[in-house]
Image 1 (cartoon, one colour):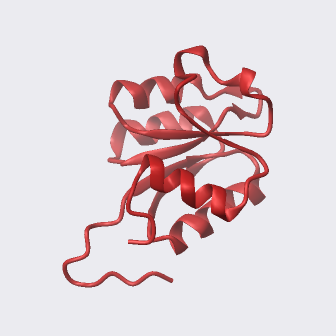
Image 2 (spheres, one colour):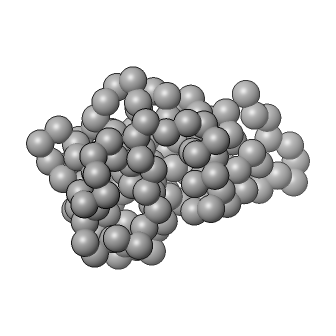
Image 3 (tube, rainbow, N blue to C red):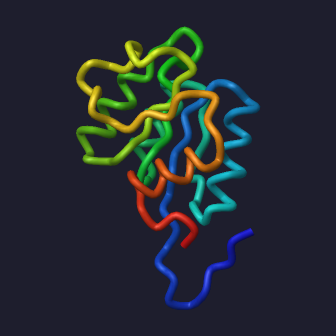
Length: 128
C-alpha cells in the first residue's frame, strides 16, 4: 500500500477499460500499489464513455477489443481531450486503430516491469 504524505503530488487518476476480469483486477492491484488512483474499471465501451463524460481522469489503459466491441470510440474521446492512454492487447499490433499507431502499446501478457516502464513513460511519477 502506498501512503500519501503532506506535500506529495496528488495521485494520477487512471481509467481501466478491460473485459477480462482477472486482467482487470491485476491492473487495479498493480496501479494501486504503484501509487495511482484507479478512477474506474469498466468492461464495456458505453459505460467507459459515460464515465469519461462525467469524471476527471489523467490517463487510461485501454484493451483494444472489449467483447465484440472495439475501443476506438473511447480512444477518440480521450484523444479529443488530450488525455494520454496506453493500449493493451493480446492480439497483434495490426489491431491498433490506424489513427493511434503512435500510441503506447502493452502486448499481453506483460510483466510488472513492462507495466511500470510504460506507466512511467506515458504518465510519469510511477511510485509517487
